[in-house]
Image (cartoon, rainbow, N blue to C red):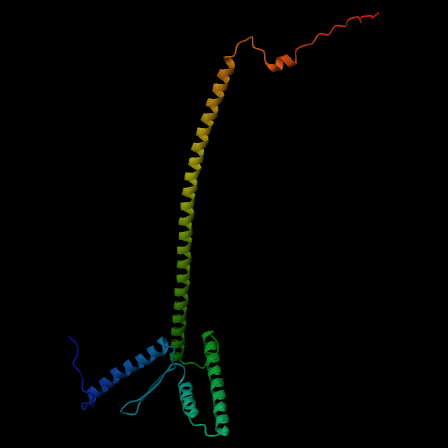
Length: 223
């Protein structure tokens, strides 16, 4: 059963108001963080409680968010070239600040220049490193699993090819056996035909090598 609709108006009870503020503040900060991560958006959130206490969240840094806000606000207020020059000067300074911030974050992620960080900052840095390491390991395992799957597919394909080749080899062997049997049978038939020939038959080869006798006669004298 869903909750009923809440009338949006100031809560008179101080305790209830503080509890509601705490819950909705945490929810709002969580949604802002999720928006910055999921959509790659630069988010800046500033909250002042009823007692004047400050709560804020920035996906990069609050200064970067406010500078960007001021820059975009000033883009619509460029009445003359001098203002445009000032705008680009602020843009350059903002980019330099962002570059310095990124370089500092990179050095801290590499374990350098940690002396100025507090215990909470170090804990946050450690959490970021663990999340990054987890993402790297997940990607590496995914690549390994894909490679193993591809190798298994190749192995199955090669195994199937081997089976087909063995079948062809068996078929060729059977055909060779049939041809050998036919050749042996034909040779036996030829040998049987030779043995049935009469013993007094003379081959052409014997006639060619038979000796020839020649005899000289005296010439006849004619008168």
